[in-house]
Image 1 (cartoon, rainbow, N blue to C red):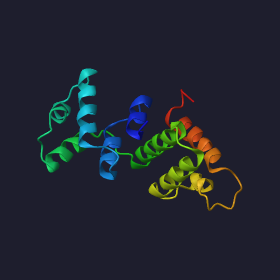
Image 2 (image 1 turned 90 degrees about the horizontal axis):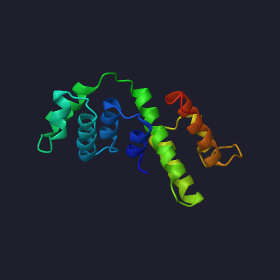
Image 3 (image 1 turned 180 degrees about the horizontal axis):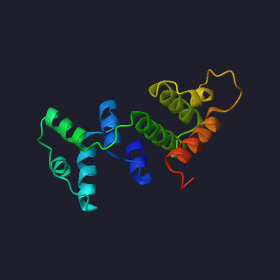
Amino acid sequence: MEPFKVLIELGLLDWSCIWLGFNRGWVSRENVYDYAISLLEAGEFSENVAILAGGRYLDEKEFESLILREIKSDDQVESLDKWRLAHLLSIASSSDSLDEKVCKLQEVYVEFGYPEDMMSCSIYSSEHICPLEVMKAVIKKLKQKMLPFQS
């Protein structure tokens, strides 16, 4: 499952995550439209969300401005951790081979700026632990932080 859908499934997606994901290429305009529509269908109305839901013809500046206006809390560290959890869960649940999962894990490790808690996920780590086992521990830690009642 793609990370965007993982965030939706876990109930972790918010406008701050959308903004970060959009800027990093993890979220498409289509994803934003769909998210806005889902909020409207759930009864969460705001004028900006309604415009975004039907905003296929908005120019880039207006589109981005509407997203920014919807951000209630802009905790970039928390949003980054949500995305990291989603990426790791996506790897863990994939049907890829172990080697392919390790390769994807290396990409995530780099893409997220070599997080300290993922140091042993690196194939270059001096520890003799399977990177995928370390990934499971990182997932558990992030879940406890993000989803304390579901862990």
